[in-house]
Image 1 (tube, helix red, strand yellow):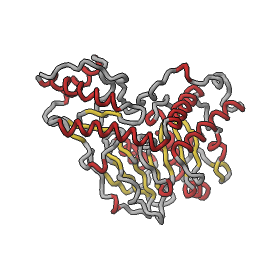
Image 2 (cartoon, one colour):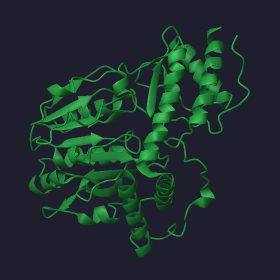
Image 3 (cartoon, one colour):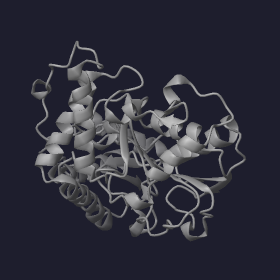
Image 4 (tube, one colour):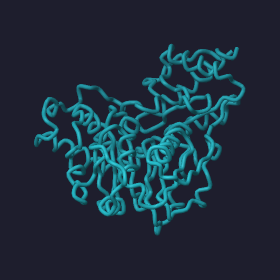
Length: 373
């Protein structure tokens, strides 16, 4: 019988979104001067612009790309890109997990674009070398619900005719993004840095701006999706003038996380922390006979949203494990996503400490022994 571990993780927060707060986070460390002020005041706009500037610095976004804060999380940011830019040329929708499948549905059933649809089962990727890059391409860089990521950007042509629209909400701040191959990129800061929800980030390269200024979709656009006025990009969106009212408390929390990232060593250190966490899980999987990675190939395994299957363990037993670990305050929110195969999903992004991942593995051994005894 596996002994019950004596020590708990210092921070048992392993949810894949919202994910763990940064190490040392407390609410009294947030700047609150902007609270109760208009987001269009000099102070409010300055804080929003500061968040954009910190984002550029930490993510190493080149000056060729614009960064805007937009409504409705990553979903809002990605929908905004789809509704304003797709339809100008053929589009290929690529899906290997539930969020990508959602974008397929929107393109096919809402926008009625008759897209080419390329899919792969959970845990796998399609053959990226066969993708027609005369089309606009829509895909998730890192599958949050499948634990599968694209193996870098070499498969994306520099001379592609179409745009790349990348949902990177669980990839940025943990994986290398080739900005020269990125026309549109979206994410939500509650996943990557443990920020509070409701806001998305939209990053546009020059080819995306050219599309926006030269193409008018056939369908009407809601106000919160409009990125142009009189045929020109609304530049204010990318300098702190948000489309609707943001939560300045959430903005200050995001600034706090970015400042921590900056002082911790920047992007390289964030990626290193995520890699170290994922490697700690991989070492445990290698020595544990009852668990496997959902992602089949090591080169395509996520270093943030690590998804595991438990062959020989029933779905009810997996649920019992998750409930038992939460009851013991050893791990919160580690069940697989509802549309994914039964299993575990453990966030390994930069705000998680490797020591907590290592402690968690002992609790996983104990919980499995308890529910399968």
